[in-house]
Length: 148
Image 1: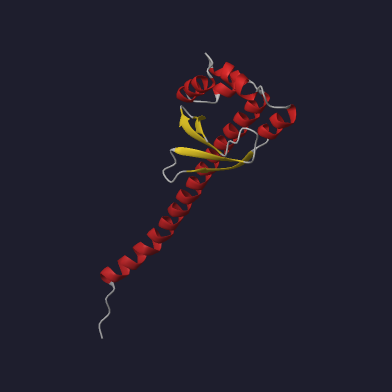
Image 2: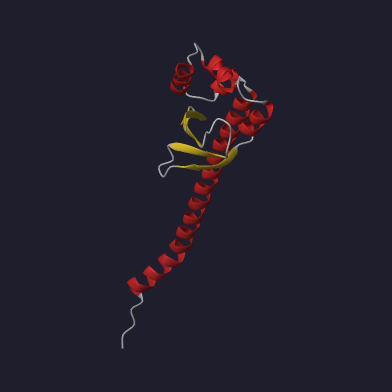
């Protein structure tokens, strides 16, 4: 029986060195991805909560600052107002103080689409019957671009 020490031994030593390095790299990549996703979800959640709170308070300027330009224009047109802040005020004007508090506290959940391009905020029952906010990340900020 003959012993083969040459290539087989070198291959074994190579895997003993490279194997742990590959495992360390894979674990580091996984944790970096998870941490990045958590940070993105945190930003998405903050934007969604702040939007609902400012909408509930009737703060048109703050609410509109958390919306895309397109969403601002659509809201103004839908409400028949000249500006987004005026449209926010008109939208929440009929609500009682209790209904405004309910709207402000209606945040439920958040998640991304598979490609991460659109963030979704689930919304609990509220007087405006908003069930979901759709947000896009623009210049590092999550902005509401639609709701239904």
